[in-house]
Each structure stands twice: as C-alpha cells, then as structure tokens.
Length: 379
Image: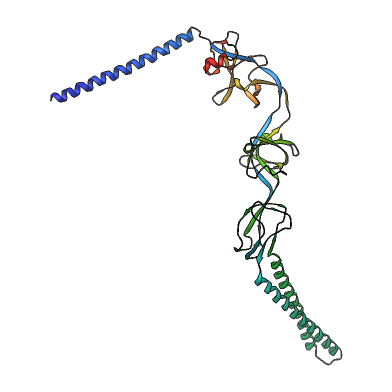
C-alpha cells in the first residue's frame, strides 16, 4: 500500500513539473511576442538598399531544351530470308550511298534461278513449236484440208504457250530480284550507329542488320508554346549550348516549324539544324536552344533581385515618402539577364527595394543602408 502511494506522489510531482515547464514556455513566447511588437511599435527600421525603376532596351531570349537527333537514320535490312555470309561494317564505320553492307548466303536461291531459267527456255521452245503448228494449220485451213475446230485447237495451244512463257519470265524475274536482294546496300551515306546481328545469324526479311545515321547535321527538336511560336521564323539563326561539352555554343538554323499544334497541350515543334562536319556533337546529347527575338526598346524594368514572391505572384517593395514600403503586385513581360520587364505595377523613377526584402512586410519602416550593408544585416 505504501509503495502504491509513493508511485502516486511521484506521478503527481512529475505532472506538476511538466505543467510548470509548459507554463514557462508559454510565458516566454508571449513575452518575446510583446517585445517584438514593442520594437515594431517603436518604429525599428529595417536596413534596405533601393534603386530607381528605369528604362532600358531588353532583348528577350527564348530558351528551349532538346535532345540532338541525326538528320537521317534508318534500320538497314534484307528483302529476303537468309543466313548472313558477309558483314562488311561495324559500329562507328562510315558508309557511302550504294556501299555493300552485308551479303546473305543464297545458294538455294541461286539454284532456283537456274531452274527458272531452264523453265523459261522450255516454255519458249514450246511456244516456238506451237507457233509453227498453228502456221501449218492455218495454211491447211485455207485449203480446206482441216476443220475449223482443228485450227482453233492449234491457236489455243499457241496462246497457252505464250502464257507459259510469260509465267516463266515472271518467276525468273522474281528469283533474280531476290538474289539481287541478297546483297544489302546502304541507301545513304552516314555512320553505322548500331550492329544488330553477327555473321552466321539467320536473318528474316525485314530484320534490321545495322542502323545507319547521317550525323553530319544534327537536329534539335524543341517543344514551343503557342505564345512563342509566332516569334520564331524559319531560316533564323540560333545558338545551341551543349552542357556535356562545357556549355560550348554552336550555330544552328530553324529549318521547320510545325503548322499544327499538338493537342491537348497546344504545343508546336521547332526543328533546328546544326552542322556537325567535325563530329564534335553526338546524337542523344542534351542541348539548350537560345532564340533571340526582336528587342523591346526602352522597356520599363526592375532588377531581378528586387522580385519577391507572394502567393505565386511576383511583387516588389516600393519606398514611400514616409520611409515605409508598399508591396505591389507586378505584371511582367520578359524576365532574364538580370532584369524583369514590367508591364504594370510600378512607374518610372519610383524607388524599389533591391536588398533586405526578407525582413519586410507591407508597411514596414525602413532605412537606407550603404551598398552591401543590407545584405550583411539580413543574412
């Protein structure tokens, strides 16, 4: 019984201690809030740096992301089934248009061609004999020595022989075409980017043997919004930056713009051709395309450092006559290069805060600090 009473006393003491700690924390927070409110009520000023809203020429640069692709790429395959007897190229090899890439084993097909040639010779001989028989029958029919039925039978045999010759010619042409298809040629000049099969593999018709691509020119296909497509023109020069090459810049040309938007995103595709004679660029590299559009002359601008987000809207703090700040929502145009083009929200000549905004709110009292001071005090 005594042990139970001691346990109850201990629990009660712990509860009192916990209650005291919580009460102290609440009291401390209230006091700290009162002190902060007192400082604000006393008009403690926040050190800030300001600059005037000004005008300057702005040259918007539209930036799009893309992957580089070959200007032409195709899987090269055979027209007929066959075992790969010769494969003349490997990955990375350069090929020219009309160059032999592979040869299939066509021993059986060669025999079929010879057989078709024999069948054609036989059909032509049969046709020649049928022509002779018909000529004799025609002369005899003119003399009345044979019946009309006999002459018709001779004519029918001749016509059948003509049909057999044509069928034999077609079969020979078919087998010869297949035999020609056993030699697989490159349709264009380029580089072998992939080899799919090895010598000795049996390849069905249409099965890719190698992939050939023309990488002397690469394409950057950029996705463009409907508000931006009207600012692009075919034939315009653009800059292409490749991060994998340390941000090295290349000059490209807009060669095609989609005439119809892709739904439901309402986006367009812009194709930019980039010469690659030195093979510096590689297909599959990530690239950024910078397109300069006509300059906005004497646009109203504010520094990008002055912008403050409020509920997904960009704002600035404007200095008022009583050394306080007013937070204003902005309607912006182009933002880049350290400047933001202002469509609406501030006027030329107004002073805005460009450093020290992190401790401001609408109506805060401020004091002008020396350059760099506001950043140090508010870090």
